[in-house]
Length: 348
Ligand SMILES: Nc1nc2c(c(=O)[nH]1)N[C@H]1C(S)=C(S)[C@@H](COP(=O)(O)O)O[C@H]1N2
Ligand SMILES: [Mo]
Image (cartoon, rainbow, N blue to C red; front, top):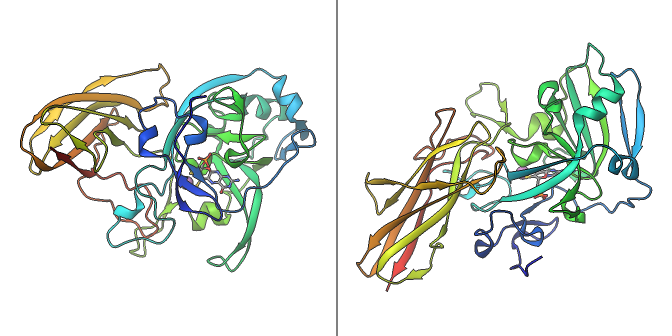
């Protein structure tokens, strides 16, 4: 593993930190540089003692150890994960919650047991509508006024997707404590909240799950009195990592590079604009992987001769026909902020 720059902390307790801008150049984020998002302190779990229960509306409930999971048929998937709160500091007016800038996003190669295999072994009952996942972490939440543990649910269809994993390895190594050791869920294409860390239980439920992190958080609340809708797949987005925001480059040809991703299809186009106004230049897409769940690299070259400060923007389109909006889409809790971002750099 190459040496990597420290994470950029956003909150120290519990740990919440963004990827360092200097680490964004890697197609697969080095494990120590992968962003961390924890709602509660990191639980410590003995992998030898750890068991996951699979129960609820099933024909045969069972318990499985980490060892038994390792002996099953494993699958490896490269996945870009973004926190639903990424970009929250761009919300106007500011939204409550962890004030993420735009780097609560990273990519890893995950290896694990397709959740589908565990559900097939259990035999899902006809009346099951969702699968609930329990994490080992929890605590008193001031906003909730009670003790809450981390739990989330998935619709059956996404739970049965062959690429939804009960992961055992991150980038070919056991999962580090802060990323969910010894086992976590990986839900490709969805914002990070779905990928429950420190997984202890999988339960088939016959009514939609109503937990705090399902119904009160990770919802798009229009704040108009209309019902909130659940946060699910990642909205189309792009990030520039060259030049870095605030950096200085020489006059001449400027090589611009970045990533683009969407949970709703493949990236079809990325455009770049230098300065304000509506002059957009199409970037070349450069896929480093066949995984449909990983971000796609893009680049273009621009001439910049005038010394001083310059602005740069990128915008991506996906195969669902969505484009990054020019302004942050408003919702009360500040999720899914995928608006075009303007960065500034200097030419000298
Ligand atoms: N048990 C548990 N799982 C969790 C969380 C959590 O607080 N507890 N945070 C979720 C959120 S909001 C995100 S964005 C991802 C972050 O995963 P990472 O810390 O490995 O980057 O984990 C998700 N899974
Ligand atoms: Mo998140």
